[in-house]
Image (cartoon, rainbow, N blue to C red):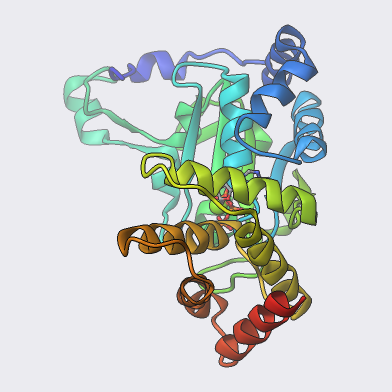
Length: 310
Ligand SMILES: Nc1ncnc2c1ncn2[C@@H]1O[C@H](COP(=O)(O)OP(=O)(O)OP(=O)(O)O)[C@@H](O)[C@H]1O
Ligand SMILES: [Mg+2]
């Protein structure tokens, strides 16, 4: 992307983003949007409609849910399907050390004074400014510290990003994601920010959807190896996930997928069919650190035993 002149940024007109989104939805048809989404995610039509309907009326959205339920994938997929610009959307992987300037970009006053507003180094762009007229995906928004939250809030409520006293117009629709079960490096969203977004809850998929998702993702991971994925393996992993959740522990689809794919790949490397003991070993390896609790191994073993017997 070439650099944008600061004088042009300062002269920018408002963009009616909810209207643009509605026009895109009309052009694609709601069925078309959901069909495109179905190529990436299963069983999330209702959640997607919650997101679309909020964006169409000018409400920002934060997807909230446990680890690995498809929050990031859904946010990116919706933004890409709507594709309001080129590139289709702007994304930030939020973290707790992010400064307001990381979001707004920065103006170098010395350069402006010496070389004028339109020198290539006068303004280093930031995502809040780049997202003008488009969707801004803020992945893990609850990692933003209060300072960067304040910069975001200002952009959301005033539709201007203020950089070193210069006001740059920015209209965007935000889709954030947040994982409430992770506490490390996580901040509460300020009340004022929370008041400006619709929280859309995402949960684990139903047993049937989980089986379908696992089969799909595992086959995808193994495609280039060219090995079969036996149904009983998917079945066992899905039951394990159910038991784990009943025990109050998260069962990430990602960790499940790679436990199964890893077990099958390793068995292939050893020249045999997948063995249950290998699958269990991979499940333990993938989940024990993730659960981050002292009794993780016991919970995993109990959930595995119940799955194998049930
Ligand atoms: N409903 C679903 N259909 C298809 N794939 C899914 C579904 N849910 C999750 N996945 C797959 O699981 C993986 C994890 O998804 P993703 O990274 O979007 O989850 P997340 O909720 O953002 O996780 P985290 O909390 O770790 O950030 C991806 O490979 C994704 O494609
Ligand atoms: Mg994510």
